[in-house]
Amino acid sequence: MNVTELLSLPSLERDLARLEPLLRDSVSSGDIFLDEVVTHLIDAGGKRLRPSLALACATAGAQEASGDDLQGAIAVELVHLASLYHDDVMDEAVIRRNVESVNARWGNLVAIVAGDFLLARSAEIAASLGTEVAALLANTLGRLCQGQVSEVRSAYSLERTEQDYLAAIDGKTAALMATSCRIGAITAGLPRHQVEALTTFGRCFGMVFQIRDDILDVIGTQSELGKPAGQDLAEGIYTLPVLRALADPESGPELRTLLGQPLAQPERDKARAIVTHTTAIEDSVKQGRRYAEEAIRAAQKADRSRPALAGALSSLVEGLLSGLPGS
Image 1 (cartoon, one colour):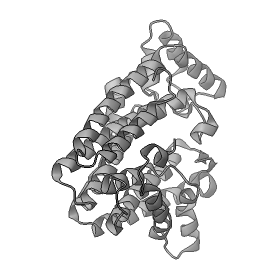
Image 2 (image 1 turned 90 degrees about the vertical axis):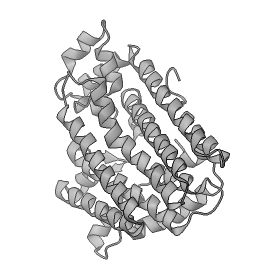
Image 3 (image 1 turned 120 degrees about the vertical axis):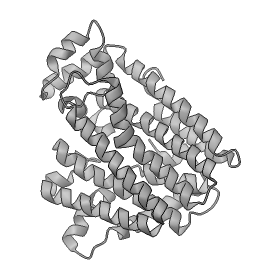
Image 4 (image 1 turned 30 degrees about the vertical axis):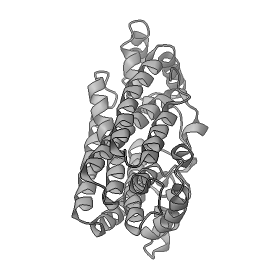
């Protein structure tokens, strides 16, 4: 997914190019080893989705991002990067963004402390942008932790409900997307009704994004995902497509016999095949579509005075779902 191409805002690509060296500088400590660790995933690339949302909401692609706009975008990206460092420790992941994960290369302790360092840098930047942004980012960190704890607590549970799943992704994914949009709107000094509408867009977009990611974990490939396919299944994280397949009267019982425990590669592949032979993928796409429609309504409400932004955000949402079965 090419974010800048989907958004197609004139100044966004230039602003993201300006952001890259600033992002690296923001985590520079002067310690050669620490700097290598904390820039490992920055150098590996990534979609820069969250800073793209922040910058798009701040500028609508109509003018160059201000210094505060760029710093707000950096703050949310650092939170995201920190979450990846911590997630890979919990998942015992060995690949991230098609490179060796930080924990695999340097060990769990270094990965955890480096993630904490990134969070500290993010908090420092947020504080420089004012009390509202600082409080917002702190609240978002709490939401991320709540969502992650909810997911960990339900690992390997065959009793996990769709409500449990939606609450977890609202915290662990959608909260930071919403905050990215909100910070961009705040640093740009937009009217409060636009700030609220863009926040709603970010939350709904985040829900679509995670549902799509969970669908791809079942039907995608390692080269597409940048990590092994079926990883959530293997680790007992039962996402929307899996929950829908478990509810299928024909395939659910067979799937249930496989789940509830760690899966080796053959069982993982079999479980993925069972899910894809039900209507679970198409049903999950429909659920994503409902959030997409809500996101588009929020985008249109946010910026009648800047229709280019509403169109760009709508295109981004549509781009998420394109190519998925039944979309």
